[in-house]
Length: 394
Image (tube, rainbow, N blue to C red):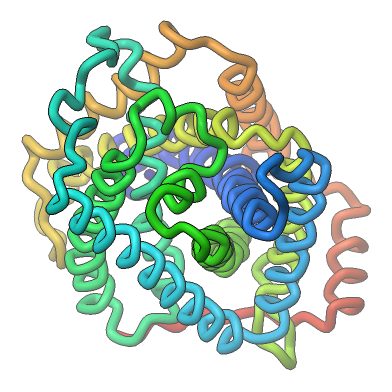
């Protein structure tokens, strides 16, 4: 946004870039981590407890414990965090393949009653469909995290593009087949009323070994949370380099070479988001803000098409596709407000408005409170931090 919209009006681009950084730091990343750890906690406890399900207080405590553990792993070692993510990814793939294969077998056995009229009983009101899109698009939102670790990729100009092109189609195919598998067991009403859909599916398909399934699914969610913990601190680091956050967040720990201050800050925010423990509400809250800035990003891309025609582009996006995505983003932001207004949208809007005040005071007016410099020095010394350097291999 700073480069795109800023090429049309520099100050507007800088303001929007700051607000986007603020939204990522205080809304998108910590709320996503909270959603995933709450999902982990729900499935893990469902797998080890009786059919009555875990109490909500225990779900919260387990989610907070998971956040703290992941923060410690990511603070200790980048390599350890990546290896842990590989292990969690294997668990995720095994779980999905079990569900997909079993679903295909059930289709072959004739369990297709719930697939014959898939849209029966669903709404045909355009404004109400947006909420359904929120939940669906949330499942595919992981691709957006790739750009946050560009500095740590080998040959990012090739591998970043390749990872998106290969990963996204695979995820789409697997997730669609997973949902089809669920419908070989459950009706829409049963699926919507279930707190742990895979558990309900497993009771009907796997029988006595069903307890293994929620454990694997919980590890899958924990792996996604680990990936977010890895990337969220790096968002803070980049924002601090641009002067949008205190400079202490651009530092890394001397021995471990991890963005320790950013990890601690994001951990605190994620724990706060776990307290309401409303997964669906958090997804709507996240999606509203996410698609607001997706739309602005597409606007910035469109601006660059006209203001920076001669710049070499590694990935070229057709203008009609950009315009289509802008229209979709407008729909996904406005439709839920009109059809399903709730307190989450209001809270998100207030946080974004506060960011404008913060920008005016600390960026535009460049007011530097004296205590901030002392606080930065204290944190730098206490955590043994040093300034990080940008290093992107070409």
